[in-house]
Structure formats: structure tokens, C-alpha cells
Amino acid sequence: MKHNIETELPIEKINGVDYVALAKGDMKPLSAIKPEDIEEDEMVRRLSAKAARMNEKLAAFREEIFTEALAMRELLAEKYGVKKGGKKGNITFSTVDTSLRLSIKVGETLTFGPALEVAKEVIDGCIRRWSVGSNDNIRALVDQAFQVDKAGKINTDRILGLRRLKIEDDTGEWQKAMDIISDSVRVMASKEYANFYCTDKENGSDRRVALDLANA
Image (cartoon, rainbow, N blue to C red; front, side, top):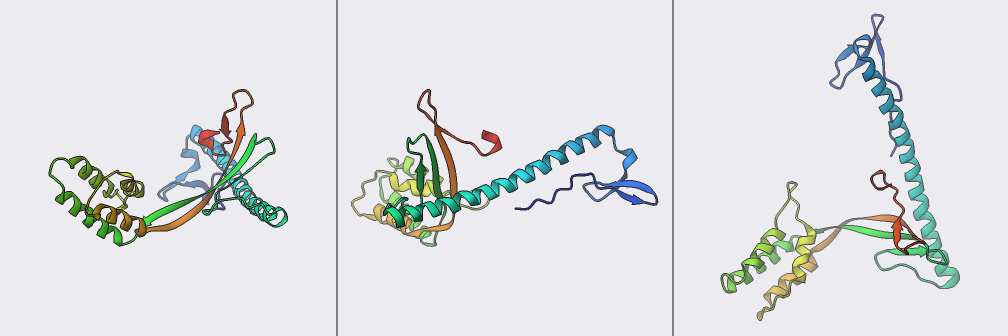
């Protein structure tokens, strides 16, 4: 993404006087702005410009990573008959001694189709049918799973987590609800992530090469 950052404080001359536009569009004489505010402005603009250039370099590097990784996967398959990567596109490349690795993973954003409401009705029926009191914890888990956030979205991990509950139901209704949940899953979007890892020679632990400021 291209960032249009002005590296100098924009000054507009009105009737021979230098003015600066404030956040709400008001004009303020440059002479009325404190010197310390001017210096702070210069520092933020200078570093913001560097950040924008670095962002562009990272974007180009990201493109380079996926282009070369895809080319290598195709080369290994065509030239050596080696198939790397799983069904979802996750793949790991490494050096001969495995001390350096490039891991590419595909993260999916999941959502649910209309059938999820049917699953909820079946689950509610199961809980009503079971003895009162003994399944209060399950009711709490179900209610929590189907809660929506402030944006009106359901937490997919909580919904899918219901399938891991060990519940025996002679009628098969619970399993039916779990099958409906599985069938209602939709992949709304997917995104590829690349991570580099190196092995610490002193203790043998794996360390991720951080490319974000928070973890650099």
C-alpha cells in the first residue's frame, strides 16, 4: 500500500502571512505555533516517512517470498518428483542442517451458513430432553459458544469447540447437531503467512525471526 506522507509541515500563505491547517480545518498562523510543537512535528514526519518506505520494502519482500517459494515447490515437483506442502497449502522449506526454515501457512477466516441455526435448535432440544441440573455446565458452554460480539459476529472457535465435547446421546441428536455445524462451515477468506525460524546453537530452541516492530 502506497502511503502519501508529507515530509514537511504544509504552510499556506494568506495575505502575506504563513498559516498552518489544523485537524478540523481551522487555519492558525505559523508564528502562533510553539517551537516545541514544530520540532515534534518534524520528528514524527521524518520517522513516518521512514516507516512508509520500510512498509513498501516489506510488501515487496513478502511478494518475493511467495513468488520464490511457489517457484521452488514447482521445481521440486517437476525436476525431482518431490511434493511439498499439505492440502491447505501449508509448506516448510529448510536448509540442509534444518537450522534455518521458511514456513508458509494459510490462515482461513471461517464463518457459518444458515444451517447453524438448525444446529442450535437441535442442541437446545437435546438439553431440554436431558435431566435438568446435570447439564447446566453444557448449557453454559452452548450459550457462551453462540454469543455474538459487539459487531454481531459469532466466535467460530467456540462453536467448533462444541464438537470436542464428549457427550453420549442415545438418540443421536447431539451428533446430528455436530454434523450440521461441520457442514455449515464456510471459508470466507484465506491469507498466506510466511515465518522464518532459526535454531539457537546454544540450546537448540527454535526462534522466529520477527519482522514486526512489536517483536523485533
